[in-house]
Length: 147
Image 1 (cartoon, rainbow, N blue to C red):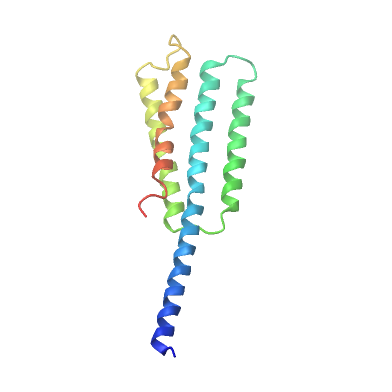
Image 2 (image 1 turned 90 degrees about the horizontal axis):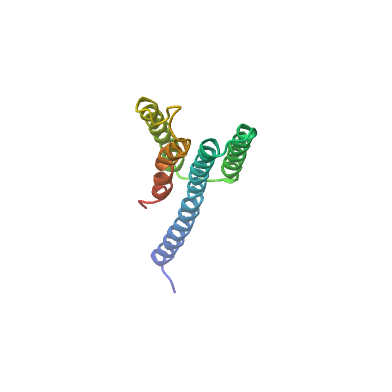
């Protein structure tokens, strides 16, 4: 015969197990923010490579297509997210803000130093785009850690 105490302990264990499983699912869903950040970094570097290395009339249209595809892919991934942690969207927003500030600094230094001067090689723009994408990649590595 089981006592009421044993029954409540078993119910508590089952509840803790279920809560742990749900938390694990939420953390896995948060990892989709990683995919979005990596996609943004890849799109930014690809656009920088097109502008810096390819000199054809349709470069602008190709860059626009890359950015549009990235937007649609990112929104599609976010749309599929049914549950996420409290820190997931905050960390994602902080990563995008860090990228924005870092990108502004990279652009400012590139212009002020003459790295982007008309007489410079065109691949300088591509290098600057790769450097500007660093915060997105670092954030993608860090998101979901610390648990």
